[in-house]
Image 1 (tube, rainbow, N blue to C red):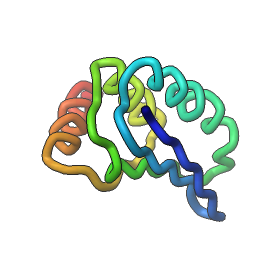
Image 2: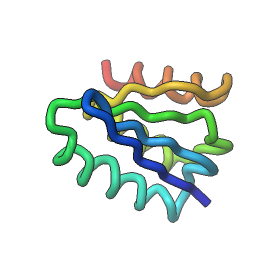
Image 3: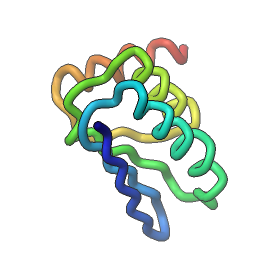
Image 4: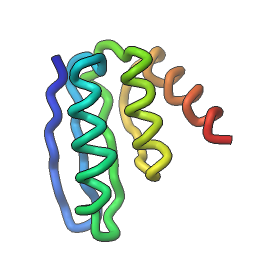
Length: 93
C-alpha cells in the first residue's frame, strides 16, 4: 500500500510517500504527481519525501523518473532509495 500526503506552502508542494511504491499504487502516484500536480504548482517547487518508503518496484522507478524529469527534488530515504535515485539521475543524462 502507498499513502500519498500533500502539504502545500507558498514556495513548495511537498508529497510525503509512505509504504511501497509498487503496482497498482504506482498508477495513483503517476496520476497524482506527473499529471495533476504539474498543473497546480504555479511556480512552486515539487519536493518528494521518501523517508517512509519501504520498497520500490520497476513501475515505481518509472513513476519517480517521471517526477525527476519534471524537476522534482527528493529528500530522505535510506541507502536503497538513494541508489535508486542515483540510477534515475544517471538515466536522465
